Image 1 (cartoon, rainbow, N blue to C red):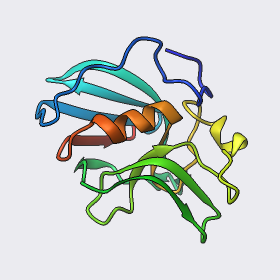
Image 2 (tube, rainbow, N blue to C red):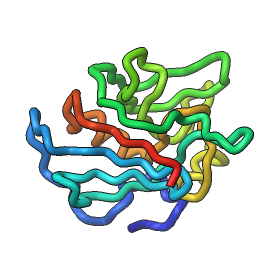
Image 3 (cartoon, rainbow, N blue to C red):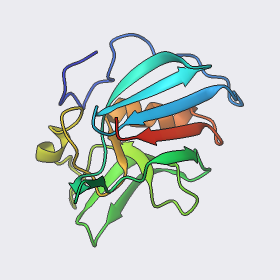
Length: 155
């Protein structure tokens, strides 16, 4: 596992696991307070990623907890003018494409926000999405099948 704050490289130095396009036994488990996202196959951890979830307000994360599914919403980049930030490599886990896995945030000029990127794997920082390193977010976008279970917990 790479050290927290590493956002230009994948979270683990080993190769990403091989995933079949229609594999059904996968789960992405997110620990909001642990700042980690785990890829599991039949309950066994295959890969661990540094992540950053929603900030806590009044003791509750802006990232909803519970069980969700990867949706067919995916894309190379977005920018939210209301929030003044965007990201790359997004994959939706909510039916309305509001909540996403995506890269660390980008600024209006499409450069990465280094202050926010430094939070990766260390602390909460998002408005509800799950932030990942640039390579990890790209890998999820390219390889995790639609319908994959997503379990988000505080711990």
